[in-house]
Image (cartoon, rainbow, N blue to C red; front, side, top):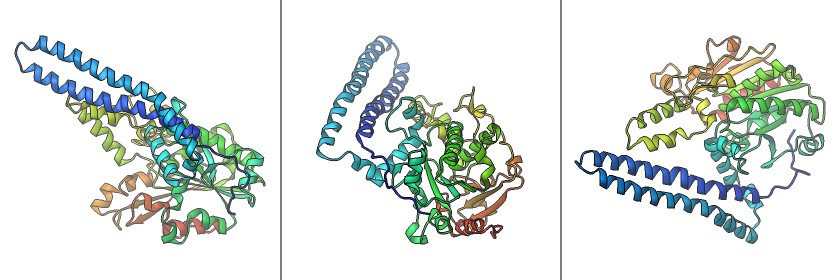
Length: 417
């Protein structure tokens, strides 16, 4: 049944504004100033090398340049206090909660977390997203009272939706008007309560998997009515988080794992994402040219969550004690098969036929078909595999083929696709 925002805690934008004031000077210092400085230094070094007897001039030049860039960095430090004062002054003339009520702001925060979420979390920046179910653009309190208030018509059948990189819970509304509804609405009409979870996609997938396993355990324990069945739906990175959570849940004996019958993975990069592999190669190539190396350094600043997508890491052991930007890194280890659960691997290609050379090479533009179907992986041996042709990665967020599959699952029928 459809949730409501009744009695949910109020949200203010003051912390978010402070977080923005903290972040902007750091971006100025670490990205803008440092990049210009390093490019300047590389160009100058090359020029001085070809001019005989220029070493004394170079020493003076470097000293002046370092002083200038040092001053620019200090300006960023001083700007933090000034920015806080400015944003607080602006907050007195308008309600800061307007930020959280703005879908554009919420989307921007989701993108920021995807790109820099690990840094935001490490620095305890208020902009760092905390994993939580969401209703009406706000976090749901994970207490019995909070869940009862958010889901007043809760049923014993629950569907948990987990979004992908740089997305949020509102991503499931993609093309809602065009398609005549969304997956959560479809399931709600069938008497299944949709729970849409938002999380910080810039953190390591393994860290999010650990949090997800705990969240699902608390959700079942504090749900307003006894949970009889749980359906899990993950898009892209969200599918990896669910796989990791299931692995942790089964190993820890968490009860919610026994309530799951079906897991739907939409465009999940089980064997890695094409775009992250390209980004890794691009950063490495840029680093080989001194004048371009600073731009390679910017590319290397992409979040831990993004880097995990290179091979589809879901366990901490996959990325621990290795260089995430190295040209050679180990592939993802296999999660354990989930007994009694049917996994539905759904992948897309931009061509109608996945054997088409372009479709085979590009997949859905972010994830290749072979990666989405995870053919030959032990955990996926009994998986149901569905191909969606003629669409891209985000098209899987709302597609008739997926809607039909979900409808079949709600009725207990085997998928017809």
